[in-house]
Structure formats: C-alpha cells, structure tokens
Length: 542
Image (cartoon, rainbow, N blue to C red; front, top):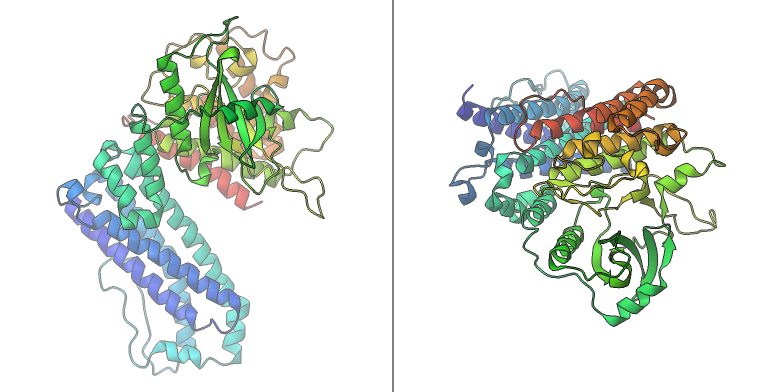
C-alpha cells in the first residue's frame, strides 16, 4: 500500500469516526431527560469527538513547517500504518454503541420506517448511511414506558461500557501519536516542536506541554534566565529549614512552605570550595528544566529556584509544595522501613506502580533521564487534617519524584564519576555501578524502576533482601541476579503473575526490541505496552 493511499484511507476513517461520534451523541441526547447520567454520557461522547476533530486537523492540515505538506506525511510507512489501524479499531468500538442505539430505534419505530444502518468495518467515505424518512430521533421521543425502562436498566449501561472502552482506546491512540510526534526523527525538528507548542489543535490535544518541555531539553545549554536566589532574606530563611532525612527539608518563604533538596558539588572536600562556572551552569540548567510547566503525570514538583551554600559545598533546590497537602514529606524508603504497620492494599500498590511507571515513560518521551531513581527519592505528603482524620493520611497514590542530582538530557554524556555506595548500587544497572564507562540510557532508568516496583510488590526495602545490605556483593551482576531471584520466587504470590512479569522485564531488559531507531522509539512503545498499560489494566480491575 503506497503512502498516498494510506493517507486517504486514514482521512476517511477519521471522518467516519467523527460522524459516528456525532450521531451517537445525538441518539443519546434524546434520553437526557431520563436522568443526569445520560447528559454526562452525551458530553463524554462529544468531548471525544472534539478530540477526533482536533487530531484530524493536526495530522492532515498542510503546514509551512513541513513545506506545505501535512504532519502525517512526515511519518514513515510503519507509523502511518499503525495510526490507520488504531483509528479503525476506534471506529469499530464506537460503532458498537451506535448500532445498539439504532437497533433500539428500529424496535421503537414502525416496520414501515426506513432502517438506519452502519458498516463500521469499511472506512469508505459515505459508508455511514444517513437516517432517512421521518427523523428517527423523533421516534425515540415517542418511546413508551418499556423502552424508557430498558434504557435506564440495560441499554445505558451497555453504552456506558462501550464509551468507556472507546475513551480509553482513544487516549492510548493520542498518547501513541504524541510519542510519534516527539520520539521519531521529526521530533528533532525545532520548527515542528514550535508548531506543536502553538497550534490550536495541538494545544487542544495537550501536545503543547510536552513539546515545550522537549524544546527546553534541547536548548538546555542556552539558559533563558538564572534561577539562583541571591536575596539575602532567602539565604537567611533557608537556615531555618526543618530537615526530613539527609536530603530534604521544608522552610517557609513568602508565607508558603517550600521543599528543599540538597545537592553536594564537592562532597570529598574537607574545606569550602567556590562553585565553578561550569557546575553553576549545570545547576542552573537543571533548575530551569525542572521549572518548566509539566503535566501531572511527570510527578515532579516545580523548581522555584536554587541557593548556593559554599560552607557546606552544596546547592539547594527549592520546590513548590501542593497547597492541598500537609508539608511534612515522607520518602517511600521510610514508609517501607516501618515494620509495625500493615502493608497498603493491593489496589494502592498497583496505583503507585502505575504512577511511577508513567513518570519514567514521560521522562523518556521528552528525552530526559533521571539517573537516581530509587525509593529514597520518591516522596509523599500527608493529606491535610480533617474531622475524620485528625492526623491526616499518607496518600500513596500521589508520589512525587525528586533526586535529580545527576539528571540531565540523555544527549549529554555522563561524567562517569565513581560513586561507591552499596545502598545506591542496588538500584543501579550493573553497567552504571562503580566507575561507569557507558553513557546513561533509558534502559538504566527502567532497571531502577524494576527495583522500586519489586520493593512495592514485596513491600520491603531492597537493601533488606540480603543480610549485609549487599555490601558483600562486590560484583555488580551478582546484585542483579540476587534481586531477580527474589522477583522470580516471591513476587508472583504477592502481586500476581502480570505484575511479576512487568518487574522481570524491567530488571532483565527483555522487551524483545531489535533494530531500534536512534530515538529508541521501539523501546518506548514496548515499555508503554508491556509495562505501563499492563499495570494500568491491572489497577483498573482491582
């Protein structure tokens, strides 16, 4: 199939999908007086239809960015084919709701009235037969009490399930198209990223936020502004930090609580050392990137600035704290180490696993690597006290990921500084322990995620998996084998085979990816399908 025919068929499928959505919403609207839920259902269908129209415009509207061609034409044949297949699937799913409503319409109408039909298997333009004769919508308005009862007790529920499935599929389609927009070769084009940032359809789909963040990543070496706080009052108030562990603390600035994170730049020096220009630029670049607006799925708070403390040879990053929480952070490592409390429910653990896996997926999307992903860098904030819970409650479904002390855009080469710490090595891929010779890549963050997911599944800190805390394991691959052995022997019984399979894939890197692109597109797709989607589906079914 040549590219021109794929484009034409895809346009036809999008048009078909929009028509089905529009007419399904019309049919549902005639039941809106029966209950409030029906109006919500109608609005949901129309919202999804608006997304379909925005996607059509984004993909096929000619743009000077692409020399007068469309964005769809910038993708290779494989990606174009996948988009077409995805949209055909969506058409088939939503078509089930339309056909169900049409059958109910036919049953309510007289035998003499023409029947409305729909062939969802064909994406040909015009295959959606228009409703003819007396408006079929009028027949629904004449429904008797039996039909109304049937809608309330049976048909509405079936339509709701179909629309929910369609919405989930539509969401996956848009996430994959966003991945292709940012993770393929076209994603390196700054003009393309600027179009995603400013185009009305792109903004309607929410593509603009990640495009802006990817541009910030690409332009990280060009610092738009310094976020260093030289205000003497800040320097003074930050001395009153209430510390939570060795890395984090909270102080009050301008009437609001601020989270701080410490980063040492000369930990081995016994005397104060001035911050050199190169390190200062790296700190400012990181602060600016963490300052960029991000979707909540990143699970990273906004960096408000940073302060240098030369006497301690460290800098302090300042982060905003959500207003709806108690500003007393607790790390996942701390929670795992509490032995006198029952572990959280299966549902809570799956929700936490989903949030963390999506965080890694989003970092990959914008070409960012974390490098220090481990449970001590995952924080939770208790809910605010209320009459039912005077002490507040630790919401494990709302993690915040920090610890970006060595993080950078993946295009940078790691400095390869030796960091011998057994507790940190547990989370590091063997290739990144001791004195690493390879640049950090996506698979290394995925490995670290696997260790954290193992901790969540067993509800046990990784260091306790070996009596010596792995201090007797001088060989990096021995640590990995020991961790995998625990996943193979214990995890399935506690979390199920699906969760166990996800963790083993992360630890073993077994995503069956061959001949990947320069942008690791196949790995990103495999990670989403085999990790994120699997965890999400399991979480939804608990």
